[in-house]
Image 1 (cartoon, rainbow, N blue to C red):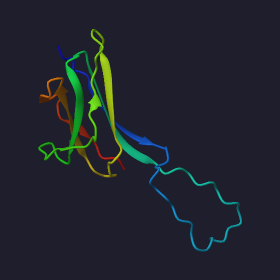
Image 2 (image 1 turned 90 degrees about the vertical axis):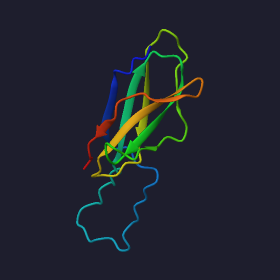
Image 3 (image 1 turned 30 degrees about the vertical axis):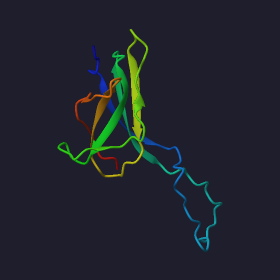
Length: 132
């Protein structure tokens, strides 16, 4: 029995620094009468998908993303999100998409992978609003 009724999509902005962003220093410092302020971390945008299930027959889950509700959808996780093997317990799963761009709307769904290797759409298609 699957309990995929709870599916959430969180739109987040984090003040965590992005490891791939380097800000070059200006060639000549601008004249100032006040001490230089400490550089603030670059905001990192991401969408987080969360879903719950008590189904132990899933090996894992793949996450798909598109720019429109009708697709085309592309798998965005390199490895499946591991499934659960804990009978009788409702487990929460999560995937963070940190490859989004500001000002773009994204659509997502999660596909389950059974222990036999069969794939099926596991969640409804969800809309993540654009981040500024």
